[in-house]
Length: 116
Image (cartoon, rainbow, N blue to C red):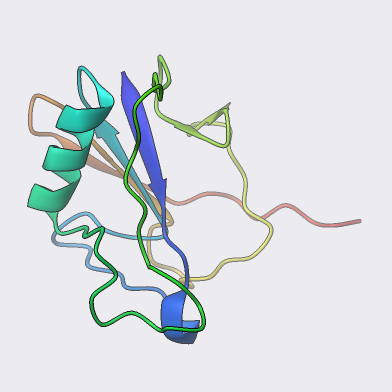
C-alpha cells in the first residue's frame, strides 16, 4: 500500500530535499500506516512539529490507525501519474517523490491545471 504525506507550508515555505526525496508530497510504500510512519521518519519527515511555525502548524502529519493507504501511489485519491496541481509551489523542482519498498525513489513533476 502507498501512504501520502502532504507538506504544510509551515512558516510560509516548503522544505525540499531532492537528494532525500522530499518535496510537497512524499509517498511511501509500506504494509501498514505504522510502518509507513517509520519509513517516512527515516527519509527525513518528522511529526513533532519541532521548529515549525506556531501559527501555521506542523509541517508533517503522521498517518493514523484506520488509514489503509492506496493501492497505487496517489495524491488526494488520484494516481500520481495523472495527478495535477493548481499551484507550482516548488517551481521547477519535483512536486512529489514516491519511495518504494525496494529502495527506488521516483520523482514526479506534476502538471499545473488551469482554474479556467
